Amino acid sequence: MTSTNSGNAAGGNLNEDDLIADTEAVVLVGGKGTRLRPLTISAPKPMLPTAGLPFLTHLLSRIRAAGIRRVVLGTSFKAEVFEEHFGDGSDLDLDISYVVETEPLGTGGGIRNVLDKLTASTVLVFNGDVLGGTDLRQVLDLHHAKNADLTMHLVRVSDPRAFGCVTTDDDGRVLEFLEKTQDPPTDQINAGCYVFRREVIEKIPAGVPVSVERETFPQLLLEGKRVYGFVDSAYWRDMGTPEDFVRGSSDLVRGIAPSPALAGHEGEALVHEGAGVGAGAVLVGGTVVGRGAEIGAGARLDGAVVFDGAKIEAGATVERSIIGFGARIGHRALVRDGVIGDGASVGARCELLRGARVWPGVEIPDGGIRYSTDM
Image (tube, rainbow, N blue to C red; front, top):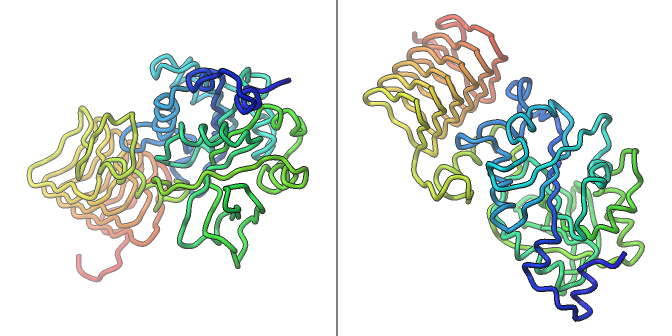
């Protein structure tokens, strides 16, 4: 099959709009999100409220803003939740279809698993747990300009040891992939967004676990395929941990992380419809208060993510923490750097610090957990 990429490089008459029309997006959303438990016990990570909207909404809105209309979601864990919420995608002006992964297939196997739903020559693939602000049109433009078989979005980080490092030459051509090495030769890391020529996906073995990072990408280099890196300094954050989830949500609220879904909102707090905020309550640091939540008088929320229906009672303090659906934080309680599960109750004057996690429905009595001696 002759791709639009090669036709364009050979001097064909396809313009940018034609190329976008022949581009589809795949979003891999099958992970269990274990690092965000207990929140992900009841909901897949991409569906957790982030600045008041399911996290995936922000990514889908960026895809649509780039001009792409057809999206395939590769699902697995709680697969039904995605279709129940997004349906056919028409509310976002998208055409969304779904493919369920019944057995773990890895990143490469997950991409190959959706092939039957794809019709375009160019496929833009995303990991579904990354919050980003890169210009997707620029990534696609580079892919076509270089007549690439694969283009990777790369970002520079201060400590690349926890990520897959990617070295490139002066022209941006990828030289090597190194997965989570302790002595990385570059600060450029794999940002979890790729542009594939369709033929590359067709060659991934079907029905078996495959890692694109450890198998597919190195094999492409061995075969001399044209693999390029698009490097930029746009906003990027892996939302896999509670700390990153809180910071990402805060950045969206404050306008540091861009999202077409928020229509330009920017401020210290975002209070959604139906929420109540008592007199003297202080909401700062990119705090978000979900629908129907209640914030008591004199409460202080700094960088808090409060899900729908939660209740923060008078005088309580919540800092850099996630409060699950319908959870309660009692009078003068303190939650700092914690995760409170859906429907949990933290009693008055409790102190939960430094990574505490309370499972759904658990009730902690008044004063039941303290780090200080005064009551």
